[in-house]
Image (cartoon, rainbow, N blue to C red; front, side, top):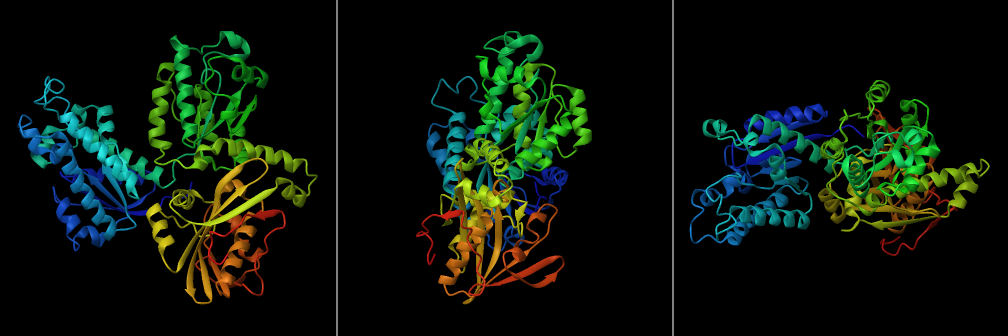
Length: 580
């Protein structure tokens, strides 16, 4: 994972959130965020949004948090919930319509900002307790309908996230969430405990949105995926089933399986006889997880730190992408000492707590706020990579023979509503093959794709083993009639080393030449992780034209030395690209 970016945050609320600013700043600092946070005055969010000269717009924030509390939004209803003229649907719809109007204005004036909306809730005990479901009066109906509208808004508008504050408050408990004394003395609706929890949850949401969450969970087997020792107790003797403590292990596996459906990769690291361990996967009727659900495995008697290093190489992931789950405290201690980049959570002794512990862990370190087609197919893509390695080993050391036997087909297209989420995701999380490491949100990619002097292109790749989906992005800016510049060039780590970059730039060169361009320029910004691209421009025929502060600038004369498309990569029909 790359370094977290600098970020400016505007916090708008119906109550006083000045105390919360400190909690959020402290939490973001834990993740090395350089955050500037501005908060509106008490219940001044409307004025700040509608006043174009307010401090909100002077800040030009990258994130706007609308922390609107249900007790404030629906204050009149709470004061007199027995009013005969109350129509729950109208009350909820009216509040949602006002919020949507404010959101539209925010997005017009701050088109690149991510807006976070909060779900609302009411105190669980209130004047209608006992009557809530036995009369026409209902507070839960109002909050429920309003939250449904928030969900609709987030789906219809780009760069809008929903922070489920209602669920967070329910988990903590309302008595711990709300501090009556702070409310009466400072007009703050959050207790100190609530501020801490909300800050942690906000940080996790932002990291998930920006692609900074962990990517892979490595699990032990004995006494982790099942109870007992496969090699000693046998398949019939391990604890795994549909009742008792065996059900706890089965439901833990269910949650791991759900992670794979969100694009989290699973791997195995176990001290075991491989034959005994795999027999459980293949023959036990209550195994939820199968071999195919794991992208890679190390089942042997080596130390687990060494095995995890091997898994990192095989999966081509940084160690800071991994979470390691093991029931044995000695193994956890070893991995923490040897591989400090790997997250090794404390793990409960009681299997009854495995599922809830995993859910808590995922909410902080594995959070996803969207799912692409590439996410759904991620495990199969990594397994296909193993097949490619086997093919390479059988190619007798000839890379060209290997490339041709892969039967690669590339396709290039312009960014559209279907591909923008994946394009933004790649800019946010790609570190190794990324020439400039510029991060863009979906809203920013949309703006770039609509700009008359900018082209946003994606690269898809398939081969004999799998369709890799969208694996590359290039963003081009026109500097003059004859010159274009590469703002962003990146490839997924899954396709590094297959000459795909040559094909991508070869297509781009042909497209730009057809548009009358004479020169293509680019920059290389060195980072801790992108050394693999240090000589890319030189190797593709670009000439060095300058260097400043470690950043090198390169230029290519398109008519004299265009980038050649490798003969072993087939390019699909490119009719969707103008002048391609």
